[in-house]
Length: 270
Image (cartoon, rainbow, N blue to C red; front, top):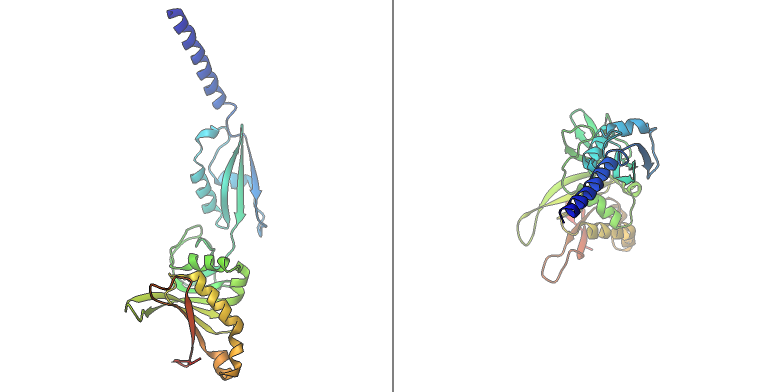
């Protein structure tokens, strides 16, 4: 009986030693690949990208800190987004990457910072071009992520309305914050003032609630506003502000919103 135990333990020991040996020889990082999932405006050096991850060849493939490696790459290359780092056994890593695109610009000291939809700082520029200018100021460095209210939600609302980044930039020149008083609850609510490329101002009240539906209301209004030509002067139609708010009450949901026009400080009767 004792002999059988010795044999069994010997077999287990051999298996364990074999696994450990393979783990530290066969299953180590030997190769890597860069898979760019999007087009690129820059000429990236694959060796330098791998080096920026701070992963090393020869390291056990099971004990890599891929989260930290992704963070290292994104810090070194602000315009790169690491989708994931895939392990292809036995010894290859595949870095699936995408190139970020600027959507917002915010003030920072004497210059501006480009941000993408994740609010990652992509670069510092002297003057913004082909982005939505946000009237806010932050202090951050390239590669950082910043916190600004409603900006992620606004980009998501565009996508939910089947509008692309390019369409958003073409439509909206500037974004500002404002506060207004809820007429029922008498509390202050944060809104978004959007300046269109035409110069028209659009006020989305209580923007933290049902923003995608309010943006849908905006697109419906801007697409049909000239149908009011039979009832309103062209001066008012072309130069009035558009205000969008949500109905309040137990019978309404975030889908329910309405609009009104304001011309020279006065609400327009429709």
